[in-house]
Image 1 (cartoon, rainbow, N blue to C red):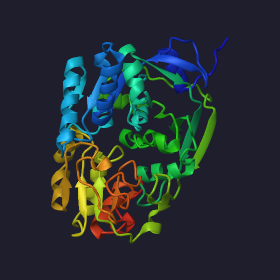
Image 2: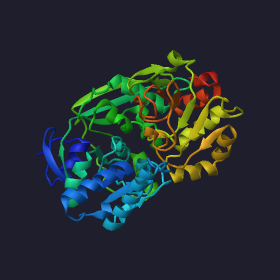
Image 3: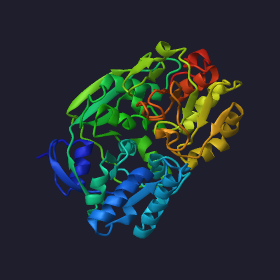
Image 4: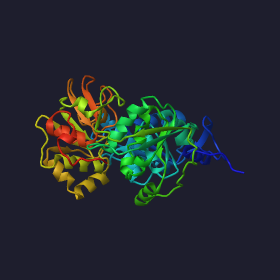
Length: 426
């Protein structure tokens, strides 16, 4: 007699909740393997925990805090937040990654804290990105961290139904995986997958290297999903070995997904997400000629080694436009070291780019400066809401590293195919 067919998420929640099986809609109280907080959410969680909970942290070895927003505090108040966080981390014995370590998700992944088959929670909305390593990763509120995760090592979950997002085809010249991910947000629809689990697969995804796969679970929050993941395969296992981590490589049973959404990206060109939301996606041709004063490689969706390679290719023999600033923000210290070894640091510096410490970059204008009314930026960031990077009258466009670099050269949003024929399909 065979048991029920279970999805990837159902298998992980059943094991963590000490149940034989669970199904969509069930409520499960499960053990949490890792809680991650950045400096802003960590400060709020610590305050609630100390003032209202009054218990010790059950498993401090399963908690990590990363300073990635106020990585160079510009005010006394910001500096005080970081110092309070340091004291709290020391007092409770939790892992702390101080300023300059990188952005929260890259840091905990690179330092081997995320394991396949584990449950990861965090208050940052992009926490589901850890589904790329075969973890069940979800965003929870600060009070949930303070009230259940820290003192009891547990959280409750409503089991989501699973949608398999099947992607096939070969993109056109100039398009990258980031272009596919941006386009997919528009196709799935903002809020179109509320409380679903998104399983990314198909021939296109299967052929991608690990850090390009990263871009798909990253987008889950923008379509309203609870979590997202790429089902573990040989690429996942190789990356886990490279990071020195082990775990249970759960795979959903064949046909267990509740829905299938199929997409063909054949011929897809470069895309741009336009203000005011990530789902307002248009082909780059529709925005060509829009002036920009700021360009940036960084954020949860950028600052990868792959982004700096693409930018260096586009900027080869060229320089940044005199009216444009190009910010270069590595996702982690490891990425910066790799970029230095490949000669990318010098190449991009000499082309006119400015390197910043590994962090989230100008996200929320926390410390890299804010945009003035009427200014515009095109970047690899994950969000473009009004006021997120300064004035609500400034504009933020999201694109691939190739499009960002091409725009840095011309001073306006530019199709990378117009700059170089070498930015071919990936």
